[in-house]
Amino acid sequence: MKKINKVLISVFNKSSLSDILGTLKKHQIEIISTGGTKKFIEDNDINVTSVEDITEYPSILGGRVKTLHPKIFGGILSRDSNNLDSEDLNKFNISKIDMVIVDLYPFEETILNKSSHNEIIEKIDIGGVSLIRAAAKNYKNTLVVPSINEFQNAIDLINEKNGFSEINDRFIFAKKAFNVTLNYENAISTYFNLKDDTNNNLPHKFNYVINDSHKLRYGENPHQEGRYYGNLELLFDQLNGKQLSYNNLLDIDSAVELINEFKEPSFGILKHNNACGFASNNNLEMAWDQALQGDPISAFGGVLITNQKINIQLAKKINQLFFEVLISPSFSEEALELLKIKKNRIILKKKNTKLESMSFRTVLNGVLCQKKDLISDEINLNTVSKIDVSKHQMTDLIFASKICKHTKSNAIVLAKNNQLIGSGCGQTSRIDALKQAILKAKSFGFSLEGAVMASDAFFPFPDCVEIAKKEGINAVIQPGGSKNDQLSIDYCNQNEMAMIFTGNRHFKH
Image (cartoon, rainbow, N blue to C red; front, side):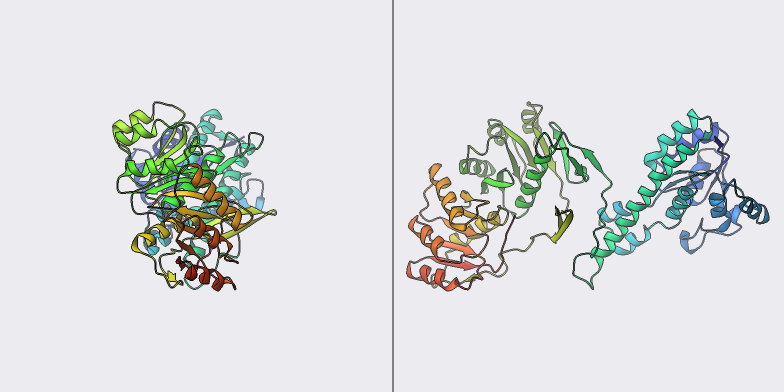
């Protein structure tokens, strides 16, 4: 057991500091501090010694240098059992510091607040990280409390041990301390890697750290353990329902990426990461009706998403369907009250938070990293057929292309009047994907006359174009890039079909 006689406190977030101050006062532990933390302590009528009085050196460089001094770090790093350390303490008049309490500058929060680069740089904590590392390294002699999240644990320890700590206690806190500094440094490293304007490549090392996580009920299947690493509160407010599952999160991710493609009022229904229904319409109720018409069978138990406010009239329609998740930027009070009748329904209010621009995927005991497919097909559209597309066809083609981009490969999407009427996804051949899409459309009573077709990759042969024409489809959008492109173009020219190249392949495996 080791008595805590003196503590150094340097914290950014002072919201819970008064609680731990009361405990320190109760056990007559002397406090050292500086800057805003010292003022806060004094405002709470608690005696505190200034770091500057100990070091006999003022805070300099606008507060950048305060605690970095041998009289502070000597007190933290000295070993009780080392005679040479004791001699140095006596020689240089250094007092032992038994405990260090730190809460670092909020670097990640500053980034999320979209602050300027200079503001972000100033939130890189130097002294705080050094204090944590020094105290953690010397855990055999010094107790470290590395963040506000550990304040209550420290309070409980000090009260339980009556102002003392044991080596096992100090080891546990040291372990947490190194996790804090590891995560902090990785956040800074990640920011600099992404900020590097001179290098447009992905980082050479995979060193991303996510501090928040929670255990899921299970993974993809009940026999698999699952955990989510991330902070959903930055993206959504959960207004109702049970805990999100592993599969919910995959579908929600696909739904959000898809809806973000559309500025016009739209409604989507997704199942197993693919849209089974989608429509854009200035009348959101009509968009819902059209999305549901796309595949009312698959819609059962799906994930629903819109980019518009849900009112009571629309809520009454949605309420008739069994669904897992509903996502919207806002709800009327009456709509939310109705939709919350079923307690297990997951209702998410989507915040206007920008998603990460990179994606990661584990493979072969490693990680694949890529920049997300954020390119817009509207930028470099090229009509390659002799027959040009009408304005109406162009709208449908772009609509279909956006959905196809977010459909599992091989993918074919059929659309008409800004409505998804059939899709083929995850097939091993493009012909199979087209046949699946045609069968799906016909099974729900859609006419393919005047519909358009989108493909996520080029046609190596004109067979898909031939099949589409026989079904009444008269306009096609695809990336192009096959050595046999001209065969498909020739068929279009000979059969009064329009074809547009985007130049962008959209594989999604």
